[in-house]
Length: 329
Image (cartoon, rainbow, N blue to C red):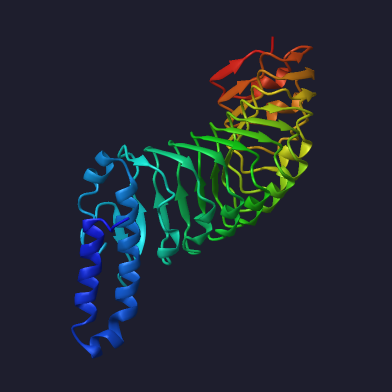
């Protein structure tokens, strides 16, 4: 297949620059080659997108992505640092995007578009420096490739609101720098792996609105920096692990709409920062523990639609910040 016109111009401009002087070649060719790889990769990907998306990216032409290309930010060295194309209605796949070309990329944000197809397994060819990857609110399907676990500099991994299926790869346990992991609103199944204990830097973990089953791993108690934990709207069973009360930084805890059973474990007053506690719509039984009255920061408490019995403990009266309390019956 012949090269598109814009790609031909790119090659022509690179040849022109590289042939001007032997001395220039010797001092600048590595940068020219690097910029040329990035420009070619973006133009090739652009040509694979739907026609309206190509029109939207009309600024992507020539040999220098750092010269006012839409959505592109560069390092002072001239290589691409950020590719930010969120919320522009772009349509196409990632299969023609040469991730290997972006050796210095720090952030890739394609959120809220109409990208579809699978997340390519060669995504691990992208810069090992990347800290931010957001492919959320698109139409990606298939599995989360285990190769994502090799992007060990990631701080934000956001794949929510797609049609991803299969299990969460255990290789995500390699991402020790992650502070945010959003996989919610997909079709993920299988269990929550024990490797989650390795993500000790996590602040926000949202796996809600999937088809996850099995138990909440005891090792969840290792994630001492968590402020938000959302596992709601899954098929989780077994009991709520006592270790969940070790998460002393938690502000929001939502385990509602699952198949959790057993009694509500005693909190021992550990979660002094907790503002939201949702255990509703499960199969919990027994009484509401008296210690719940020590959660002094609670604003929202929902325990309804369970099999709880006994009176509401008087200690609920200690929750002076409580604005929403849905009774247990």
